[in-house]
Length: 220
Image (cartoon, rainbow, N blue to C red; front, side):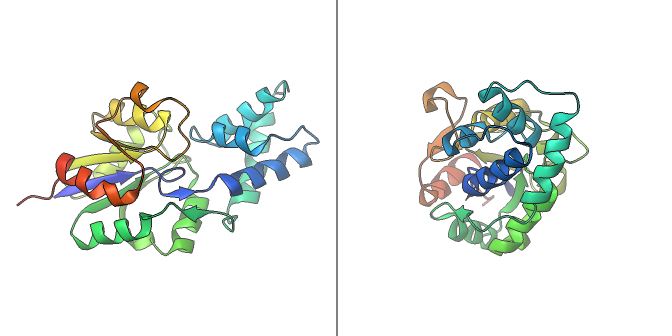
């Protein structure tokens, strides 16, 4: 059996508009300078505390002791169910459903916290497609540490695995976990594709099945 482990933000869903809206509300509540959409989007991928820290640094704001923890908690209360601006990338839903129907075991490994992750999966009607899950607030380090990927692998009844992600964090995560990597080029990546470790790249989810059949095919 083969398992396909996906990142979420920037890979399956474009959540940057909702994340930016939540960050803007949080910064306004703190009476701090707001980041642009482009700035916020460029900071996504390493978890909420890192996102907030980068937002402050971008505006020259020095962090106070405990500030990141307080702002992280506030952002979570704003963002837990804020998904009105989030969309699938083209071809994602049909690809996931076909892979599931064909017998692939699907996992999700995200630095997004558990509550908004479940809210997104429920909103898009795909929660039942995933057998293994790991979150940014789980009892293990965040990506690019390989621990969350291994947590997902432990939940999947599969022997061969492929990791699918969009960013520098994902490429490093797959490398650290010793998994082949399929890089989605239309997400939140900032580094040129040829400078990231990966085994294959794709710009539309219609192209992913051919990569899976090469790197993690179902057994004959």
